[in-house]
Image (cartoon, rainbow, N blue to C red; front, side):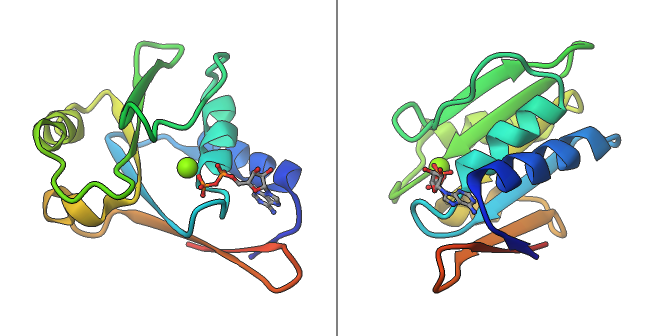
Length: 135
Ligand code: ADP
Ligand code: MG
């Protein structure tokens, strides 16, 4: 699917968030720096009814947002982390909690912890600056 602007990525994320019903759910986001992974999560959060602004968890590794209705969105970014250390345990715990929606950017160092057949969304650049999204 071709996404031509930041606005369109936000809309795609929002619609995706609105459509989520079954939990727990893990979404792995794959794509280069600046591809639009966090932008997708901003839209997703809006679709899930989160009012707070979403910022990249690249420094804190994880960020947590309360959803209306008591569920939680947990957003991880393991960028360049060779050893996730204690964050691996944190991720495992969050994946086992049925009240969570977990989104992971740069999951390479934690792939062994991810359940098989989870949702993967791949975002790449096109030559014209638009993004290609593969589900
Ligand atoms: P990532 O999390 O993948 O590193 P971000 O979502 O933080 O990327 O940043 C993507 C940047 O690219 C934002 O500054 C956004 O405004 C810009 N951008 C331009 N076109 C698009 C598009 N079609 N989809 C998503 N982001 C886009
Ligand atoms: Mg990001």
